[in-house]
Structure formats: structure tokens, C-alpha cells
Length: 433
Image 1 (cartoon, one colour):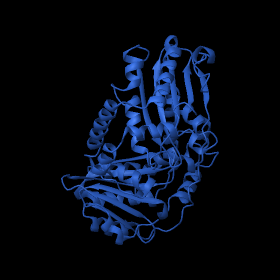
Image 2 (cartoon, one colour; image 1 turned 90 degrees about the vertical axis):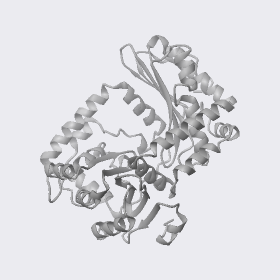
Image 3 (cartoon, helix red, strand yellow; image 1 turned 90 degrees about the horizontal axis):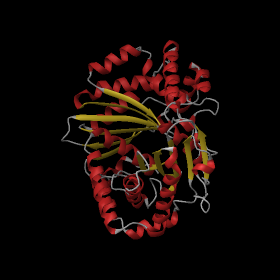
Image 4 (tube, one colour; image 1 turned 180 degrees about the vertical axis):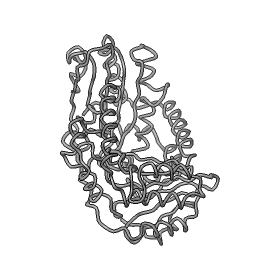
């Protein structure tokens, strides 16, 4: 559903919405106590939108956007941002990409003009392409040497098996080497259209002026991007092992859990915090503090439009890996059967509310939060609303989540290290996987 400008009165004070005639949606949060402003453009131009034979294209595209426009080469662009004292950046996820800038609020107009150049008139110069390709190939080599990062590529590829959500974000050495300037141009022509754009701004600004400037610069932008491909993963319990000699065993796990739009998302946040969100969490206490089985362990929520998941990471030694896995599985079983205690619930609420307030104090965090909630739900959540939603979580809601989403079935497990299947798994999962 599109929210019209007449629905402005339904938004909380200091929050704004507008849609330009060409389809660009705009949302904002006015934060008068700040002197900074952060704004960005979010597009569905990410990993799942790459052609199947062009893995890594979206990530390369992110780099190449800043390498030249019709008016400026890469050096001139960097100098223009620096002369404004602006921070700039871009990121590419599985489903969306962002281009953003953070500035002193008086530099908004000039900075928006620079982003207009980058988004609408990129040139993808061939000499810069070879440099960026070289950088990404180095990234891939470095990533291949970092099992802590690589472990969740294995988890993700198995959890999302059969969908584009399981793709490698960086691509492969072979795929990146084959990417050409025309691939970048084709991707830009296919995905960079106004109906595909969400503009988000937070900090100090004049909303009417922001709307006017956006219309002036982007109002003539025309075109229609195709809808994003629908992703419908159906995770199954699996164990994936990558053999790597050494003195470490890296474990990654994932099971379906409420996504960002689910009515049980806030109870899921509480469960995540209790399970592995801090140094008082169950996994940290049981696996590290009591038994000394790991040097690092954590759990956290992830969400895509079609499915959410709980991820667990543990870094251990080959000698302790089997017991480590046993204890984690035991804790998941206990969680599923018993839920959490009232003390755990209250501590998790305090921690989550504190984190939410601290994250919400900066314009960058609020800009990202606005874009995320609008993209997922077409809603704006104030910090106060989030705090109230966390406060409202009950033990009964927690148990309901654990009845809807078993932490043990399906459970995707991946490991990188020297252990073979029998040495690591044994009969630990005989009733689960």
C-alpha cells in the first residue's frame, strides 16, 4: 500500500513521509538536538538481483559507483566530498543496497547533488574497473583465510539452499574475473529506477526543503525496475563440514526464527539475548565460563523478507569441539522445553532497551532503522514504541515462539576444522539431525 502525503498526520511528531510523482519514497526523522544529518538511498539492487552467472556483480557495482561520473573522475569525487567534510559510503546486502552520506546539516544541498551524480550518471570507467577488481580478488583471498567469516557462508548456503539468498556476496575468484563494464551498465539500467528507491534521512533538516530539493534533482528520473525475485527457502537439518588442518574448530549453526515483520519478533529478540547476546547469556556461561570449551561464542537474529533465523557461532579446539557441540545442543533442548526464567526475561529487557536507546542516539543509526522498518513493514517505529514492545514481552510469548520455531528442527550446522563427521557429531544429533 502507498501512503499518501495526506497521511502525514498519522505519523508521530518529527517523523515525515512523502512520495515523489515518479515513485521515489521519502521518510525522515527530525532530530533538532543534532547538528549532523545522515541520509541515504536504499534500492533493491543486491545479491539476489545478480544474473546467475555474474556472482559478485552487486558488490563490484558498489565499489564502481564511486569511481566516476559524467562530470567527475574518482579523485574529483573524493575531493568534492572531502571539501564538504562529508562521510560517504555504500553497502550491499542480500536483498538491498544502500548509498549514504553523513554531513553537517548546512551541507545537505551540495552533498545531495553529489549523490545525484553518482546514482544517475555513473560511468564505470574501465581503468578503475581493473583496480576495483583487483581489490575484490584480494578481499576474496583474505576472506578465504578467515574461517570465522567463512563459516557462515557455509551455514547460509545450506540454510537458504535452492534460493539466491545462499549466494556468496563477494562472488568467486573465477566469477569476478569475468565481470565486464557492460555487466555493470546492464545492472544499473535494470535496477536503478525511481520506483525502486527509498530515501531516508535523520538528523537536523527542513523537511519541506528536503522534499523540494529531491524533486528538483530527482523528479525527472524515469523508469521501472522489475519486482525482486521471490525467495522461498525451506531449510532442512543438515551438517556440512569443511576439512581444514589446524588447531581450531569453528562451528556455525542456524535455525528458522521470527523475521522482522513477525508479531513475535520482540519475544525472539529476548530469546536471542538470553541465549547468546552477552556475557551473562546461557551459552557464554555454560560453554565458556563453566567448562572453558570456547574462546568465543555468541547468538543473534537475522532477517530477510521471507524468513528469519537464529545464528550461533562457537570457536573452539578440535579436542573440545564434540563436547562444545553437545553442550550447545543441550542448551537448545532446555530452551525449547522450559523457555526462560522471569529473571532472565527482565535482564534481557533492560539490556535490549539500553542497546536500543544507545543505537538511536545518532543520525546514522536512526536513518538505517527508518529505512529498515519502512522496507520491511511500511511502518515507522519510534524509539519509545520499540522500548514499549520490548517491555510488553511475557514468558508466555517466549514459550509460544519456541513452540512455533523449534531450535532443533530444522537445525543447520557447519564446521571448519580438522575433525571428521563422527569425531565432531558422534551421536549428539541422533534425535535431531
